[in-house]
Image 1 (cartoon, one colour):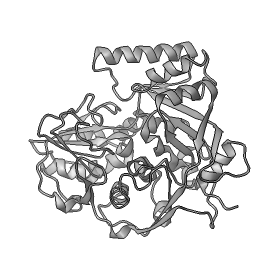
Image 2 (image 1 turned 90 degrees about the horizontal axis):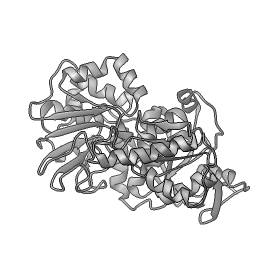
Image 3 (image 1 turned 45 degrees about the vertical axis):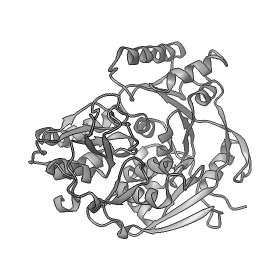
Image 4 (image 1 turned 120 degrees about the vertical axis):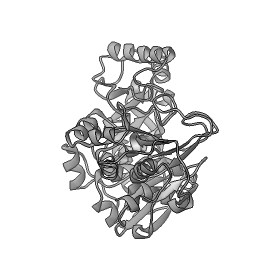
Length: 411
């Protein structure tokens, strides 16, 4: 029987010849992850089952959502998780990057099954793995057993063809898709991205596509691994590919040359419009970073726009590389120096501004243009603030002018 890549990975992990959508399975998990917001509850769930993790090298704890701790309460949560790491002698403990970027850099390989206590765990599916977010108590169970139950999802195929025009990036492509499909249009579906556009773009761009699968309700985002994937990772894995006659719940053919710079307007991610819709709207803050767009090529695009220039006086530009490896690479290329000279506040790798915990909280009535993945009411601070999602290029160009602009005029 013909199968999709998601079905093949889940069949392999559950030791079955094949699985079909709707099957309930128990699968072996290669890695499980929780971060500083979700680990404490996961630890409580784990402690009700056993006192020893299934594998100290496959349980990963990351401090990223509020690191360094901005409050005493946050410090106490860090202390609880840190004590657990020491008690269990976990090898995978980090406070030097956003969890999804670290999982890409250090752990996930093609064919793996990864579950994380964070909804954007779908990001890592860009490496040809099945990766998905779960609740903290489920993660506690996986920490104890190394296994997890799943209902095999139906798959949607997004066949992306052609090449984007200058000034249009993977973020614009995925925003356009989310706008067309809707916030619940892929509910519990595997979102499989294919086509020559996907094959030709960087792994960083592929990660952006998969990162936002959850914003249309997807169970996971996934892209078949290829030589580009293996070269990027520097490690091998088990490569699965969808059969040509595999069954999909729906298929979308998208010519990316027809997509221009996009924005998602508050208060929902699928409220997507061309940037021209809000061109000229004043901004107070511009944010470049996160698991969606905090990688080296994102920072490079912003640097190209802002080099030897100054951001608008009325704007604060916050830049958070997604990991320390990216931070160091951006330093070596001179990106962070140029952005600092332009007036940016370059911060440590953190999720803080994206979730309104620290490092960029918005006041009432303020407008932020951001490369992050969500723009819900109150997410970055005051509920009367506005969050507008865009590509790193649009973020940087808007910071330069002090108003939302089309980045193509500044590249």
